[in-house]
Image (cartoon, rainbow, N blue to C red; front, top):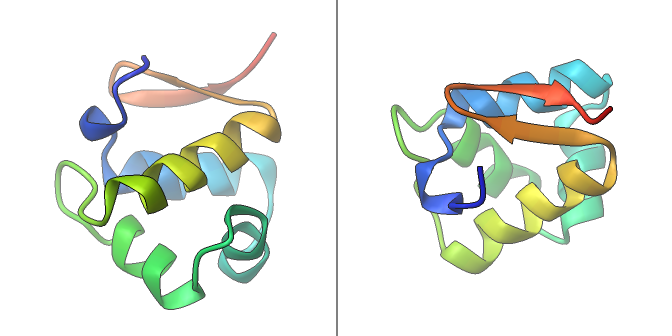
Length: 77
């Protein structure tokens, strides 16, 4: 899944939980504020936020081994 505008807030939260890091740590890795990440994760449906911030969080999660798939997440093989 390559379209960041199709990623949901629950997918971000699930991805973070899958790799076992906290919001503050992920926010730092993505260079966004923790409140911004909290708002993203609490989005119903598509993640709300500036596209560059969403892309930074998705990139940070991908760098940590997460792959976004349709309606979910998994660890890269």
